[in-house]
Amino acid sequence: MTTAIITGITGQDGSYLAELLLQKGYRVIGVARRSSTVNYERIDHLLDDITVVQGDLQDQGSLLSLLEEYKPDEVYNLAAQSFVPTSWNQPALTGDVTALGVTRILEAIRFVNPKIRFYQASSSEMFGKVLEVPQSEDTPFYPRSPYGVAKVYGHWITVNYRESFDIFAASGILFNHESPRRGLEFVTRKISNGVAKIKQGMAKELRLGNLESQRDWGFAGDYVEAMWLMLQQDKPDNYVIGTGETHSVREFCEIAFSHVGLDYKEYVVVDERFYRPAEVDLLISDPSKSRQHLKWEPAVSFNELVRMMVDADMNRLKNK
Image (cartoon, rainbow, N blue to C red; front, side):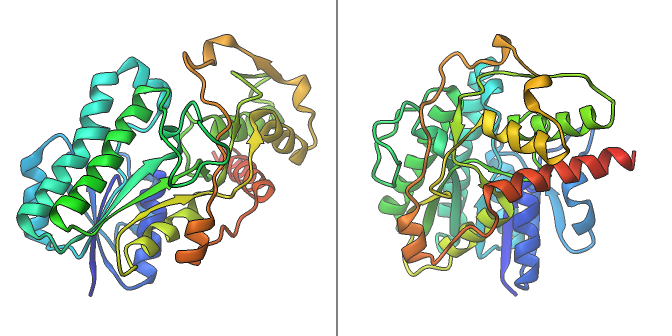
């Protein structure tokens, strides 16, 4: 039985990846930081089938112990301080977890078993102030937030360990991927949840930042398959994962509100408090390499994703 360790298993991507690996017959070990308030909401339905252990990207010793005890064949590093606005408030913490945490895992692999296959969750936020449109694996990085800067470090240290120590270390440069399991602090979930609350009379408005901001949005459940495919290749590499389409926050609002028979213009209020200090430009992927080498294609369309998220929040609020 193949064993995989997933850091950040309690997050959106971790939960979908755990489901996928269980379907493929893996033994799944999930790593979660110790907290006085345990939040296993996204993986509650999986707890009988996976093993959740304590570990921390800021603690080298805990990572060494994990690898020695569970002897994984694959390690997926999905843990990070991943909320961009928070990275402005806590830049040093973001760097320690999202950047140096990658080094600590790679060092643990190098010492315990260099044959372990490693996946690093890189991000389209690394492109930031984009130098070309669309963005491919060869597009230069120009991050525009502490989170983006930290992800650039994590990406390049992954490449460095691959080339220096012959470790199978793959980096997935994932563009925005959403789902009903997305945290409420992210704009897509903020919109779907806001629509559901307004429709059910629980709110009267939805305050958002820049409605013209554009992103390449896909479904997280599709993207975790690409992560797994990267570690099944003969050689490790970097892969851009995205839909190749771009949509604005305004368009997301329009589809979400119209799905429940409402006009977004009557409820959405632009609030400059939610603007970023430095906005990124047009993020749109060129996923041709992943489609050619991984044979990966997204299955869920943008419209389907928006409606899926609204429906999930409508059902959640009805059942409260």
